[in-house]
Length: 104
Image 1: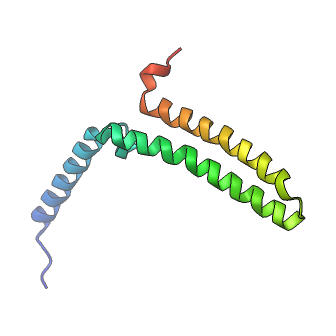
Image 2: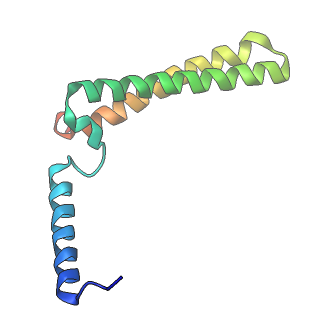
Image 3: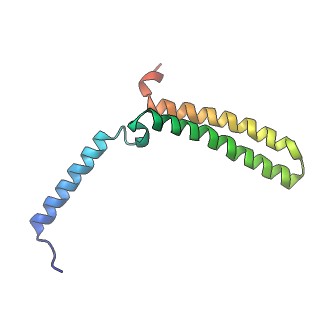
């Protein structure tokens, strides 16, 4: 194989950098890119945030209850904690999606 000559390589790098900049400009703010596609992406993201927090905290509570043999205590505590964390995560993500709506 032969190495491409230097001008072609530099031209390719310049085109690649221009494409990356254009992609970054077209993407929302550099984060949460999937939600820019539409309302369905935003709804899925918010749903997953709240359900994941609820399930993970519930699972941790269940594990603690099984380990310590205190059946409903930690499960209930962690489920409530999961709901609180889920709502907080949804608020945080919604704020990132619509920063203008949350300006004080």
